Length: 261
Image (tube, rainbow, N blue to C red; front, side, top):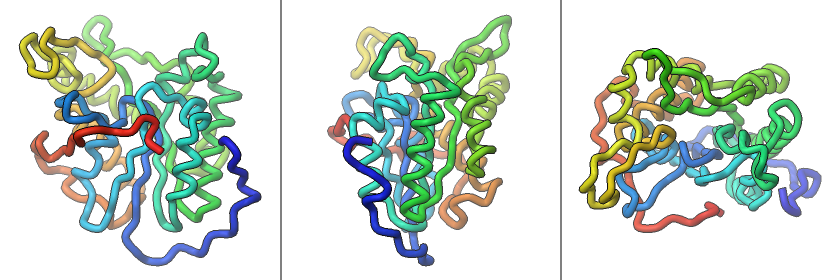
């Protein structure tokens, strides 16, 4: 976590009743994309479609990030400086932690992965905020017409850590697998970034089975929001969970900062 040390921080004041911010720490499946990459969107970018007035989503998810690189590049330090008592921190890594041949990103599921995740939990708790672990959303992979898991041991390692630390868990891997099963192999294409040639931002077309277009980002954000509501997390901050939402409700900024410090 760079030069940041929990022992250097003053004790935070007890949470007060107020509006709050939902911070998202994650990878490209959750990150915010600029206008030039529309309709590509991450579920963290779409999450504020489901928030009430006064609740802010501060999306610090970053394309290509793992729990390790997100920390090493100072993004967790930036969250630590901004998060306040009563805020929420959604922690979702796994896709790039799997890249164990990359020393800057790869982690071992039951050792270094859990070590880095604990860093996020510690930051939230120190600041009297609320950490929530979110297993990674599944890729679009089908075999014999059924979706298959692709995330190895990382989701189970996160589930075990949630139990050990007493941290709420949103099992987005399981929820997304169930959604892909309901939609089917063809029906998932308009959730993932599948676009025909001729699109203004993707002139050659694209077939991406990891990242989402706006519709999919909204539906994955809905899974997160519904799971949070069912566990009475972010109480009073979520709305419209059963409403249809127009993809244009998502905001694509003109530019973004990478990493999101």
